[in-house]
Image (cartoon, rainbow, N blue to C red; front, side, top):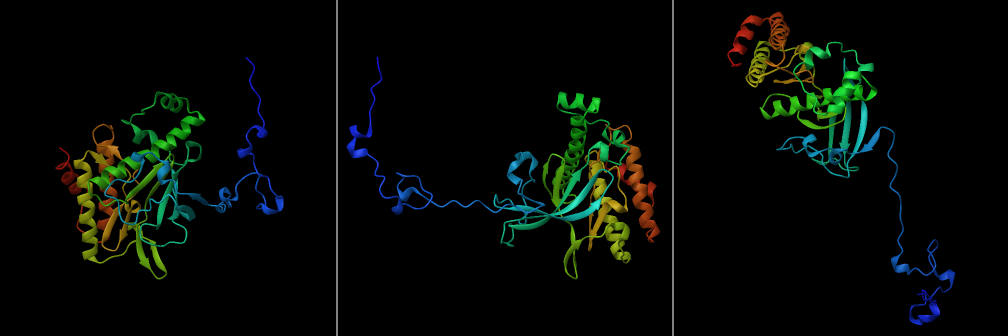
Length: 309
């Protein structure tokens, strides 16, 4: 059977009115009703060091725990802007990152965060990783093989493991009410978290590390008690910081905040768990003792053991 052919002459009522091209908006195709024509303007390109917010690009389990703070920016219209390096470390670099809805500084639409970005093993100066990772599991068998063979994918997986380990630790410790930065999100090798600040002459500044902090006896005693309670809560949950020192704690006025948690270890599952705990006690107690407090690492360790079992 042949297919019938038709022309516009067969449908006079539907014949397109091409009209005078001078009557049509510039740039429109002939025969298109101007009522259905609109102007399209591409959005401005983001500047170097900017990206659209990745909040909705990550899995729900990789976003900050609820209840979420009022300052958290979750708008799809937000843009992330790198503000510069905050600190370089053994396994990662920390940057300040502004996440904001352009043109708005309202609460919940503009905030400065810390973006911690982990380096792969080729660019990491941290040499004791295996000591901390004993007892941890790799969920994906392909990733496990890549790690064992130390392929480029394996090195990327290892960097992502450190980011995820710190994310898991932050989420868990935040849930226990411990003084840690609020975990905002994790995406591959990048971890976003709360920026701990103090008020400076020109606005918010990064809170100083305990190592560089100065305080009278009452302030020192307050920091020590917060530290002891935090370590006791961690041990009670079967966890040890593993690299705790005056360099890994911030002081925001009277508040002490524990940071740098990728190497958190299981007190029992890790063969060196108790050794790590003793070292943490030694690092912290000796600093406070040097400031004039009558504290001892062995007394602290014994106190923490009372919370372990």
